Amino acid sequence: MAEITYDLVVVGAGPGGYVAAIRAAQLGLKTALVEKDRTLGGTCLNVGCIPSKALLESSELYAETKTGLARHGVKVGAVELDLGAMMKRKADIVRQLVNGVAFLMKKNGVDRFEGAGRLVSAGEVEVASASGPQRLETRRILVATGSVPSALPGVELDPERVVTSTEALSFPQVPRSLVVIGAGAIGLELGSVWGRLGAKVTVLEYFDRVLPSADLEVCAAARKVLERQGMTFHLGVRVSSARAAGDHAVVAFSAGSEQKTLEAERVLVAAGRRPYTDGLGAKELGVAMDKAGRVEVNERFETSVPGVFAVGDVVRGPMLAHKASEEGIAAVERMAGVAGHVNYDAIPSIVYTQPEIASAGATEEQLKAARREYRRGSFSFQANGRAKALAQTDGFVKLLADAKTDRLLGAHILGPRAGDLIAEVAVAMELGASGEDLARSVHAHPTLAEAVKEAALALDGRALHGA
Image (cartoon, rainbow, N blue to C red; front, side, top):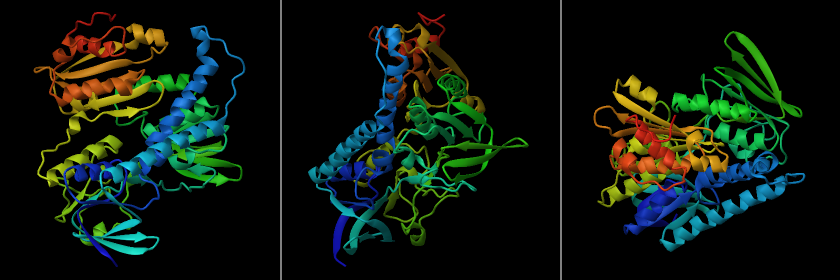
């Protein structure tokens, strides 16, 4: 087997791995990127973040055309769905971005190897390529292999009837009915897509609320909005089985002592994800992992084996593409002797329903559990001029600040373009800003961002346009 020596070999070309490879090359490290799939970008780009957002935007436009344009004085005739064209648009976006990542590898001088990577030692990675195994010698290894959908006991996956998010991104026709197992971001987003396109969507969730890790007030409000849009929720239930049964699927679940079943044309299993380290050789090498199968790392993202590092979904923390990217950047910067850090208290999280749900920092429940004294300020989009003009007034902005120092501790937004609005607060939190800093910053009028300013003013009881 031919041997090539590198300063860094990155295993996994998702948003953690390929971004780390680019940054390493910028810092002068001879870098290789190993990916088992034919295309780069990982789950996020190929069968996750990007294709789902493409379908979310397209389905939102379809629903708005059918039911929302009339309130703007726009009359349309019969609205027809061309699912094939919608799917083609999604595929074109993915293809363009995948090709863009491949171009970035060439531009930055990163050597790309296609095949499954296996850690032979702290200084060797074996690539099982189509042309045969190839061994790469390296000073350091960065594991960024991401995650895969979690399995549920009793749930029998079927490529047609009981599927994961991968298959749910490419249904050949709109199902008449869809049962979604899991009311997290993936379940609510893909449930929204197919619900807008005409499916009857029923969501089953083990916990007693949607988005179990989000702020409780936001969760309750989001559920009401989604119910108005046609989703049905069964919360606090335990799914015992799901299986294909001819031209439909059957799901069995319990609600307390009561046993129930549901039939649907398709079932989407969206009950979380697990770290992907299958065949990596990490355990055999002695890399320590926790009970959840996550790779344990120190503040430098180094594992228990010197010279082997890990970032992204395989380590602790939220499974978010941008978190993985920032960890990858910080890891290689520290390898190169450059200061790098990730502020886990200011990582934004977004659910792309309509309206969107976004957060950063602590929830109100977490602050209460920590017995942290805080103040809250909120502002409804009902009182925002831009939201009125958009006819998108559901939701609110909620800010949490330390009761003594006024330092921002958390932000939670349910509303139009919440995913864009949260960035302002995340930057403020990164810089250690106070609620007063945000309240004193000039916001253009009329904009949705004015709701953030008003929520900051409300921290001190002085919102100008609130009730």
